[in-house]
Length: 256
Image (tube, rainbow, N blue to C red; front, side, top):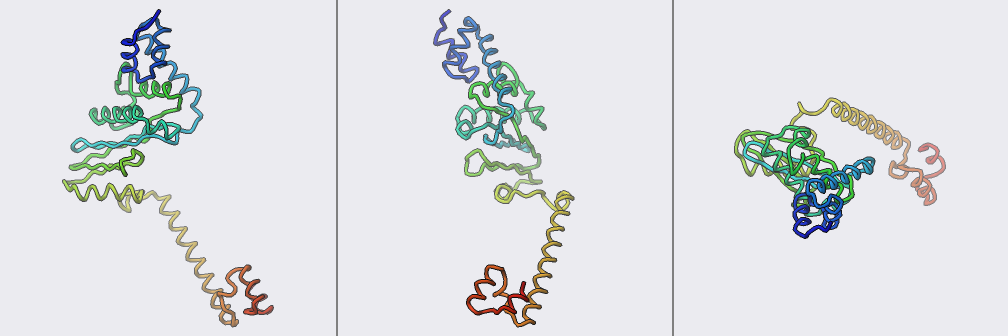
């Protein structure tokens, strides 16, 4: 049966799919909107399954605050072309809006929220079918406090931060949010630093100190031998400086 432009437009509004995808789904479903929506959803599931091993390294990151609650979420995809698409960004925003409105604390809670004719996870799967790319929700986090602040670096939806303070301090909170974006700290204070990180940093400091001590001892020994350390700091320089007459064969042998 023939489908009308009104039906195509209605399905497109519900699903976000392209005109031809909507027309084909409606034709296959004999004009039944619900069946057409299911066809589009199954297409998304097929795409998701087929591309499950692909790397979703691009995406959209957004943050939102509502009083004492702030959240950040990332919707990942395969290419920056899709990541910058207005419909993709709008979907990310709609998911974040729903998550904040419902005060979701975990990503699983977000995925289970109702959206359209299904859940948030269904909406992501549907979008995957529309774009033909792997998509996944990732990195949902929240903070709560007397005052919250968010920051979207350069407004490009790629790097966002959220901050909670124990009292209203707009300038300080904004400054902290920007600092987090710039420095990517691993903890708020020393108590929050993982033991594995502490141990690794201590080992780096020990190794550095040992090297400095060895280098100092070598420098002292060279000077006692009457050799300028700068002339023998590498084998390449030693060969060059020997050719220039700055060090002799004996110096060369001692330095090696």
